Image 1 (cartoon, one colour):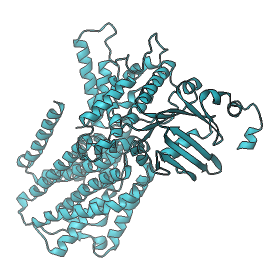
Image 2 (cartoon, helix red, strand yellow; image 1 turned 135 degrees about the vertical axis):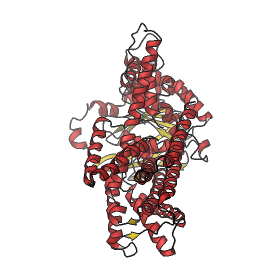
Image 3 (cartoon, helix red, strand yellow; image 1 turned 90 degrees about the vertical axis):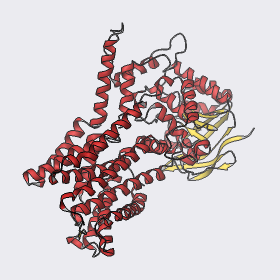
Image 4 (cartoon, one colour; image 1 turned 90 degrees about the horizontal axis):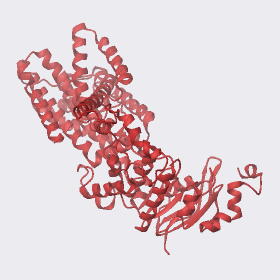
Length: 379
Length: 257
């Protein structure tokens, strides 16, 4: 039932996105829209690895840039242009995926802060390599081939390919979250050693998620490159890319399915608009940093989980009022108190019968639901 | 009687501290065995090296006939040895049922399945549900594990270790910090599971708990086995009294460390 409703919601959401360019034909608007969709795909991909496994990567720009340069170099070498360039996105996927295996095998040996630092190191290595190789065009970068369609419909192919990428990545994220593989990832996030002690082969599981995430990021990078028309080291391998996808995922809800999409839909257009409006790119960067602070301090779990919990609480309260005040008192406790209430009898002195913990207490329904909501905050 | 778990000559040092020194232990198949000793005597370290969480410096560990020395934890678990931790370790941001399913992933029957299949088939969920009923926390199956009390977490950890039907379970202080009625429940459940065929090795400081449950008790002190045998004999062994009460030689602390 809930699954059906969510699938319906997702369908409507993507249908609206599919109709968007038909309604809004202003090139400035659709340009921002393409950019937003590319970033949304990258943010969902980042979340498949970092959100589910808890390993925060600040080096996904390596795969984004690798995708961009792959398309650029291949198109130049094979004299590809027009629609044919889009086929090269498959090559971008392969290169980003291939690159992620050795990088993953190195970085995933360590955890937490050390992992983050290593991914940052990868990022700087990649940027330096792109600046110094001749095949990447050094610091002047590489130009994209020219599209062969008219200016009036210029954005459309980019828009629909970016939308398809986002839809496919979201579907993958949804499949993974509910699967054994996803459960193993989330178990690793909570306690990797414990998971290993229950038979989870942590390294292959982490590496698989890392590769999936890198493949999508590579495609996003390739598409972005063709759309923008040029790749230079500091923009193809951009620390702002890393920061942006992280803030998007944190803002919407780390480890949820829809959170990174919501984050991208809010943050990317806002950034683009600010940059256009004030012709000052630093303003949006300052605001991005400020937003990160606000999210971490006030909404550490992100918008979607927090909102879902509030809605369930509100519904439970209304249901409690509708059912009439119970003798015990009408106010349903929050999840934390509910947990403690349920715990209570376990710590109470032994009753006449052996009261096993957890059989006697029935947590108030509101608390149960709130707990469930926090978990189900997925889509 | 067949030996289910056997460690021989196991030594382990952390820097200059010799945590285990030529340690040997045997657990018979189908029994409930106890491992006791003062704080810092190496009980948890012995658990860690037997379950793959630490590497031994010397010695061998066998599970049945199979040598499992220095195998990683996931292999040890797959071979049929599960354990709990002294500081209970559950997955706080998964639901209670999801906690159960993590361990079920690699329980023999599920190994060849499609990784993208939804977590937990019907049979696995039913088995998980039964175990949660057994330990009395089935009512919380859909709650986040984070919301469980300390005692309930202990029960959850015991339940999810059992979901993969291990041949032997190592329990590290199952009764530590748990109220008396829950301790009763725990020993009843351990007896039931043992009657159904699961072998247990239990580290515990609660002497009534250990002496009531275990057919055989091994005593560790300063990383070596000082006594081993039925509870009644071990209880009166002078070396054990020494280890626990420090009656004989007061300069133990200086000499031993």
